[in-house]
Length: 180
Image 1 (cartoon, helix red, strand yellow):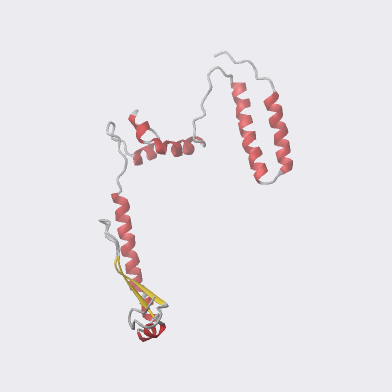
Image 2: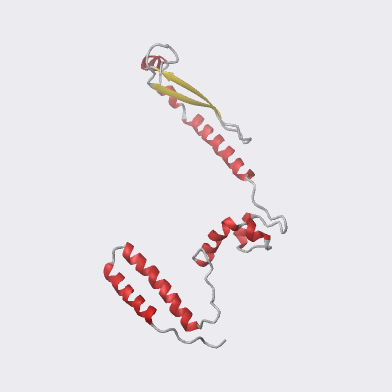
């Protein structure tokens, strides 16, 4: 690249100056770029002037932060046409307002379930299974998680103990269902 000033030497110094920050309407920032050779950069007393004073840099950063905050506030939130529940309200309350909300907020239900139940899918009671069997099934699930964690941590002795306990639980006969 050739120097913008002398048009003779190779440009090795590149100066980018922010003239105007991006506005909230979405149009980009205005910048000025100069590509200079070392001789022309020395004549302009660079890099000392390129650094600028701290107060002007702080003011530029403040402008950028203000514009970004305004854009975040203006971001539209999902709202149900039936019950007028917004995504923010759903996240705050943790409950949906009407059946249409399930479709509208389907992309966000997984994270809400994970926050509430510790898993992305609901694990409720299973009809016809007694309390003892449910506890056994839950223990098997917990042991599998612990076993996986022990293997990842390379705690092989603990993993072997967990594996044996898991095998024993899986081979046990399920107790007959408790009457409801």
